[in-house]
Length: 236
Image 1 (cartoon, rainbow, N blue to C red):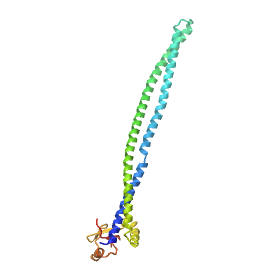
Image 2 (tube, one colour):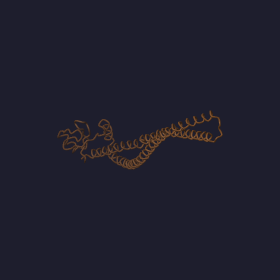
Image 3 (cartoon, rainbow, N blue to C red):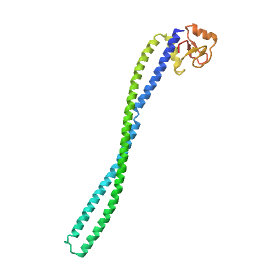
């Protein structure tokens, strides 16, 4: 086993783990920042409230109109039957007014019933929206707690891996580190491959017997004749 080769393979294993954990940390950060579901639920509550308020105002207006109309009719009836009015024409006009006020009463009652139904529907919609917002908020809190716990563990793991990387890199020569770093981008962060039998563990191409023997016996690094990765003897 070539010590430098094994060390490089260990370094690559650590670097790949760091990349994977780093990507997950970024994903967690994005998930923690994603507030779209709660904002949508809040918007639905706001819209439901905006629908309800004018309906409630309209209902109150109708109630006031009905009360005013009823008071006016009752006052006219009281005056009519009080015996104070003697003029036939005036009495007739009062009776006509009372009939008109009664018709207005009926119209207002119909409008009030329709308005009350409309308000009840809007109130139900608002209650549903508020319940949905409560569920979304609770689910978000639970999800974020789980994500933050995972985030903490990942940060601890990354700190440990960075320490391990420093230890591993200290055993590798500057020349071999430069070779490793120079190949990382071109080889999708996998510049080192293990020799499995006589074949490259990444591309699967079999090496010549001489090259395979050199890799096993000579501490100098060899490259795969196909993919150009550094071929080393290292444990899985």
